[in-house]
Image (cartoon, rainbow, N blue to C red; front, side, top):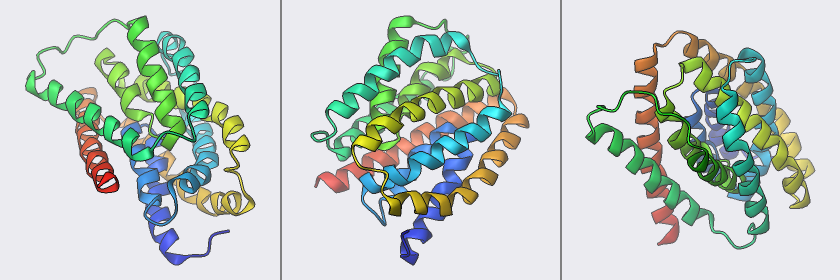
Length: 250
């Protein structure tokens, strides 16, 4: 188990954020690995957080049981599995800084496009299979690399304007399946060391209450305010990722 106090100074708020993300505020989950990476390597951070992600997914899944959109899942999951496979295959070559930069640019552009259109296009869009497979694959790939599959998922699902609890429940089930599948390649890549698993066990109690808090907040927020928060978080996290990746690449 990691015993460095600086690690826990970063890990406790990071895992609280993770729990809130699993409770329905999915976008903020992007911050988890970057925060942990202040104290440990991104690879170790991803290995520590995956078991916590899955257990938090289970808690959230019970809270949102059957409150999901089956059509969205049927469209996106095949692409997501392909993205995980590509992430596993390219694990030794892809730089995390480059992935974060791409994610950041896409996230900021998505939010700015929404705001610059002055929200005129408020009607729900019909799910597109081609777009869903593409964004699902990108979500699977970036989720595999650094648990940052949120922006591609949000880019496809947010314009569909699902009810907040359906939106959150679909997100929870999608990433529960995705994270469970990731256990196999993560195991073969050696990310489940005894030190990492013990550290995950110590941090888990922080995530569960935060997950339940996220579920509680989703129940009490109206749809308009919910989507305003989602777009704001996408923009803020995009800026954060761009800044972090530029610093790493310089």
